[in-house]
Amino acid sequence: MLKKRDVHESHVLFDLMTHPEVFPFVRQKAHSYEEFVFVTKQTIEAEERGELISRTITDEWGNPIGTINLYDIQDGCGFLGTWLGKPFHGKGYNAPAKEAFFHELFFELNMEAVFMRIRKTNTRSRKAAEKLPYAILANETRSAVYSRINENEEVFDLFEVSRDLFTFYTLRQQNEATEEQALEA
Image (cartoon, rainbow, N blue to C red; front, side, top):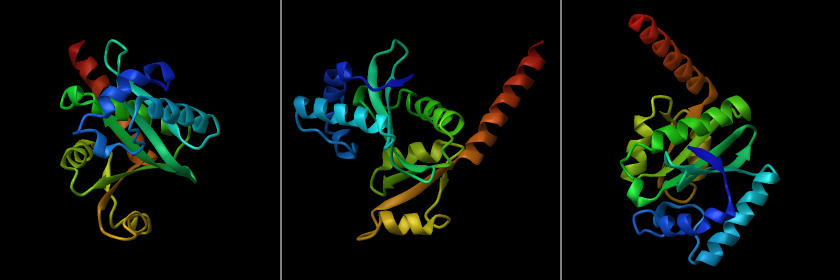
């Protein structure tokens, strides 16, 4: 479902990213294919320097369908940026991609928290964040971060996924699977 970014996927991802219902919500915008290739190369280099973490989201056949990224990493925290191509909206890819990414971030890369800065007008992303059982609205609990992302105008809501909440969620999922297996036996 996730793989390291690869320049060879640029054509497919650029075509998906430029859809009018996707493009406004993409953080690293590119207005041409050549610019997208350049941005992708910069992203890969920035990850090698430890400045961000970026993965391509794939469908069940390994085809690229979007990207998921952790930007502005400081003190074990960073900001999530995710987009899926329009043909893949509402098909159930978002939550598993986030789950796989959070698993890597918290259990392999030892991150502490992931923030999601979501425009108050972006209903699709807000609903997706609210569906995640391990994400909390953090406008009040992380008021300093909330103030920083809304420095000039109150545009964004702030959601947080902490390692603790995600770990609790993961353990609960494992326990439920174990109980289900025991009932089947």
